[in-house]
Image 1 (cartoon, rainbow, N blue to C red):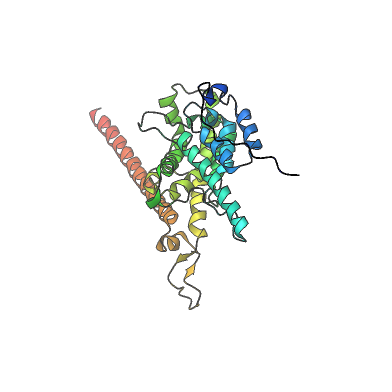
Image 2: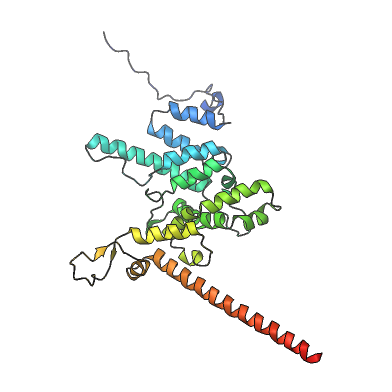
Length: 312
């Protein structure tokens, strides 16, 4: 049986021709569930990229709801990774397609969620995320130190990555200074916000990791460090192998080794170790000055008492 001839799709419009768009009724996504249904039904890479691209539409609010942001974070996870595409050509092609989709999700997040205002007095676009406990933890998950999600090369930053870099610099600082910023952005503090403040304080060790990754150590050096932050910095200082002088015990151990003390880690160039030693010096100096002020106050009080006794 002969195959039916293909229909010629190339035609010349006649006088009765109507614009093909007149028959269409394009709709916009009203809920994240509608968008997700289309995503699950998508088969082609172009479809998935198009669905992600539509999230960057200024009129689209899906990345202003926790479910949309959470899903996009999962798609963008490991956006600069390899997706196991080493074995053969087909696997490599599949890995490249997955990476392209992940990078598109990351770009959309940068443009719609991670972006920060240009004016200092404006609250961040993602400020609302801090009050959503699960989404806040999801963002910390995306920024987990063992993943490559915020490893970047500054010389090849494009616009989305530049927005992400600004987010990485601002996010831990906003979380650290949450109570004072809440007063600036929202006004009156309520007891219901105490729980969120406690959550921000509990997240400070993670903030420390992000700050160190973005090399904003000068900001961190001006903050008070609680026991949890000191423990995290100590862990980071003693965890990595450093280039250190040989031991004096005559052993031939490799000089590229883990330090045995904060002082040794600082000698090897560890930034967390230097931070902790500086913090210790500043703390001891504050105690010394406080003791001197206390002695001086007592001396003044005794002088005033002696002066009063003379006048009697």
